[in-house]
Amino acid sequence: MRKVVFLFLAMSLSLSVSFAQKLTKEEKAEEKEWAKKMKNLKPLDYKRLIEEKESLSQQAQEASSNLNQCTSSQAAKDEEIVKLRAQLDSLRSAAPVAAVSSKGGKKTSSATASTAKPGVIYKVQIGAFRNKDLTKYFNNNKNFSGDVDADGAKKYTLGEFVEYWEADNFKKYLREMGVKDAWIVAYKDGNRVPIKDALEGTL
Image (cartoon, rainbow, N blue to C red; front, side, top):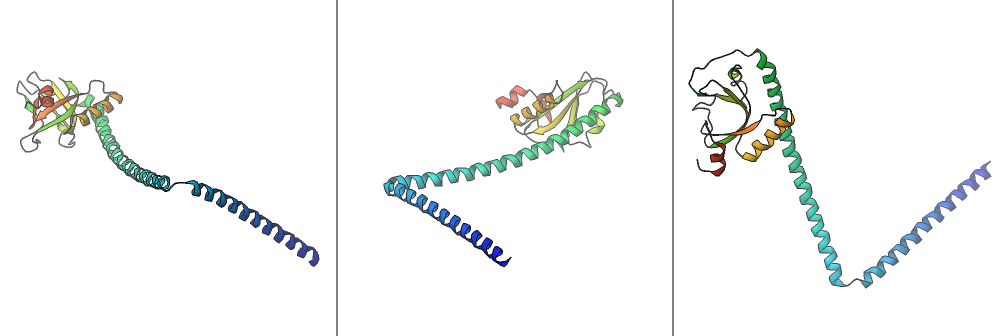
């Protein structure tokens, strides 16, 4: 029995050594092949390959950094959209039971002198109603505001954006969510102004 075991171990060792020698020969052949290629490679060609490698490595690092920044920015925007969607859903559910209020003929604004942001900002109007008063929700939702026209029409807006393109992106999101009447309006120092004048910088 011991002889059989010894014979088996000897055969296994022999196969292992043979396999190791085979790998070594393959490695030597590969090394020899690459040595020929390196011998035929001119110094300037080698320099160019090194420079290309360094350039590609730098580009890969920059792309990775840009991807991380975009991912972080997208996550922040997604979080803001989730919050605004929740506010919109809350407003939609509250609209049918909102109290009817008459403001007379005087135009009022949700933005006061103490809360109005200086300069031009853009908001997205989501609707105008005569018999729905949602002004009581303004204080609890900083991104929700509105105006009352002289004829009593109540115009409600979502969001505040310094850049027009940001408001435009948000408007598109709202339309995808089903708010087909969403459109951009402009304010300067808390007062509503024509969108054309805001975009042309004539204010």
